Structures are given as C-alpha cells and as structure tokens.
Image (cartoon, rainbow, N blue to C red; front, top):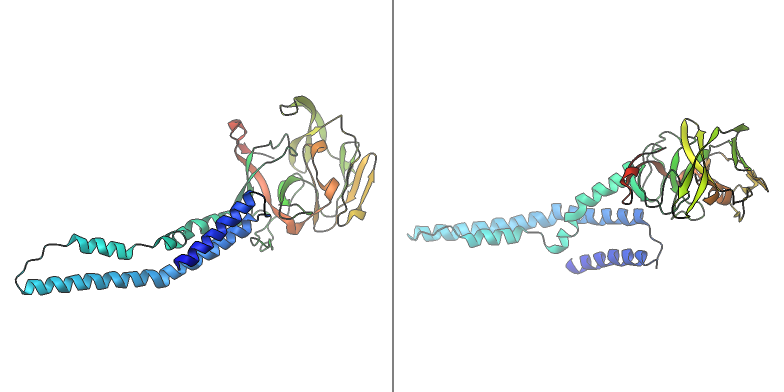
Length: 322
C-alpha cells in the first residue's frame, strides 16, 4: 500500500504540475472530485480495516505486558509502571504516512468539495471585459445554488432553482471551449430579441434605460472612457463605451443558431433561442461576448456572481455588486 499510495500522490502532483506549466488542459472540478473519491476510499479502509487492526495489536501488547507483570508479581517481584509499554502502544496506534496523507485529509477535501460544488465557488477576474463593475484582480464569490444545484464535473441539473434574470452577472462555461469559465452580464433571456445598434441596447423593441455619468479613468490604458448607467430588469449598473471603436461587430465566429442573428454596420440583432442566454460585458467595446461567439446554453451555467471578497490592490472594492 505505501508504494501504491506514493504512485497515486505522484500522479496528482504530476497532473497539477503539467496543468500549471500549461502542458495539459486542467479541470479543477474533476481533480477535486477524484481527490475526494480516492481519499474517501482510504478513509473507509482506515475506519473499517486498518484502525481496528492497530487497536487489536495495541490491546495484545497491553495484555502481554499485563500478563508479564502479573507473573512477576506472583513471584514477589514488584514491577514499576513501564513507560516503554505506553510509548510502544502509541507507536502501534499511529497512522502510517500513507494513511495520514490520504484518509487524514479526507474530511478537509470533502468539505471543500461540498462547499465549492453546491454552495460558493471563488474566481479571480482575469480581464477587463466587465470594467467598471469588476476590475482585473478582483476575487469574487459565485453562488452555486440560486440557479439550481448541479452535479459536479458533468454539470447536470439536480434542482430547478430560480432562472437567470436580466442584469445578473453570471459565470458560465465558455461555449466554444467549455473547460474555460467566463463571466458576463445576462442581457437576453430565452425568447428575447436583443438589438445592439449604434451602441444602444434594445430588448424586445424597448430601448434600455441609459444615462450618461462621469467619465471613467482607466489607469492601465491611461485614458478616459464614456461611462453610462443602465437599468436591466431591476438592476442598475454602469458600463463603458469607447468612441474609437466602431459600432459593427468584427471577427464574428460560427456558432450554433447563428441564423438567429443579423449583423450590419450598425451592430447586431439576435433572437435568443429557448434554453439559452445572450451575454454581454459591461466594457462594451472591449468584451468578447455573445455578439462574437453566440448564445450560452442553460447546461453551461456555473452560478451567479455577487460578491468581491478581496482585491489586494484596493481593499475598498470588497463588497456586494450588481
């Protein structure tokens, strides 16, 4: 067993290393699931086999020492308490290293697995597509149960929950490459007609409320951008527009149900298919979103983003957002 355990642990470390150096495409959900299963099997083996066997061995050691002491007492020899017997007993009961690194870690790994899979999952914002709502480096929490509980890895829905609403900030599996997680804002629900023409958003023929606010200064770009306040559903949020970018959508990919979209020099109009969603970034002219790669199926949903729990460069950003 020590050799087998060393091989299993080496495989986990090798996979993590290959993922870190981008030699393989990593899947943390799968890795965590496998770690939970493997350590769980060791934990069961420890509880049902190895621990009872060590306890029997310790009991036999104590019985042997007691019998020896009784025999000496019968001969009139007074035997003082033997500290070596207790030390030997503790050594017999101690977990070997290969159980300590598997069964011993199972409760912690199980807690992380349940928390991450069914309650809350942390993410780090890698790009500026959601500026000004989310900045690069923001560490956020995603609610995993609002939209319905899902099985880890396969993402099969277990409960219905509450469906996404317009204005929600949602994490989802990127349709062209589901191993990647993306974050955007829900703009169009199933059945909606979404039009983004000349940088104005219209849903089902109704222009979305929008008003100009103070320009936003981007320290990375060292320039100001036009900033607007927009109301989607019952949520008010801010967005950016870049006057230097054209209204038309360049570099559109082929995607399922692309025939539902009509592109022009003014922008795009899309009819959202049933069971799918139209997503856009708040940094409207610097976001690769549904305008470029299509709709997000319900099966790709990960959860609803709602909290910035840390930004090491700016602690004032900690808090709930819309």
